[in-house]
Image (cartoon, rainbow, N blue to C red; front, side, top):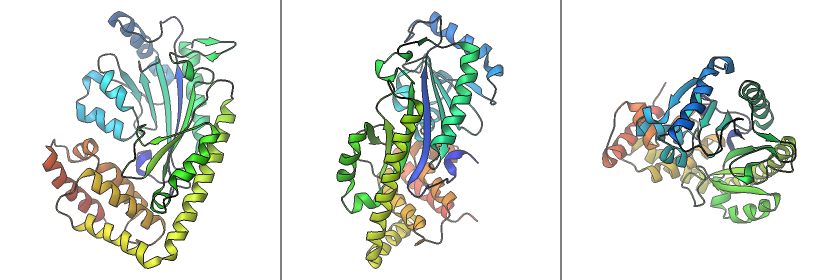
Length: 337
């Protein structure tokens, strides 16, 4: 089973962990533009693909249809900007489990990404370092004694490490404590954004927590900082859930109404389904809802998103049809044996 359909440590609050290294290969200009330069870089990577190992496959963005690309975005494997803007020069290296996804020709030559379900910063970092070292030995990176790994954007220099976790914070939203908590952790040099990097609110109450600094800090210091902040968020979210659970009937009513609508609706929009699934996930994590497993909740989260839903069904649908099909998918997942 793919990592994003599994639950992991502290997955009641932390849905996933990502480690990303920004790297550029020696002998190539940064931020490649011309077809000749791009092809040379891609060919060098392809020539070493077998030696890199990990059963990685090389896929060109231009060979993917829009739904396939957007399904990768929905799984957080590639960024929305990369999917939209790098079609002619972009490619990825990806394994069958999809816990490794390397973006080629984003801002930098390589964005090496490793993913885990739940809260797994150290293990994910160790695996990413192993993969990164293998690629460095084969391809060679642009590196400077003073500034560390060199990147197109100065803000990514140094370690080139972006560590991030996705956190599900419905109780902090419902108790209206989210802004206060975020204001406090802003002092830790931490970025707080929506699931796909957007700054606006999101219906699923999922936020991305990541480091701001990559230069002048070690990989271990970055990880420790994210860990401290995330542990605080876990503590505050669980405290808020405990507070809501005191007024048990109101919380149960909200959760079971959400469950009932999802199970019985005949059509449902993406926004409404995300709000209701967020409630149902909290209800499942608290043991209020016994009818669903973690695996089913993870499927509901992913396969109600437009592109992933269409991949799941093997068909393309217009917007209104998608709302009808989304209701069918929800019912099928809930009724799975």
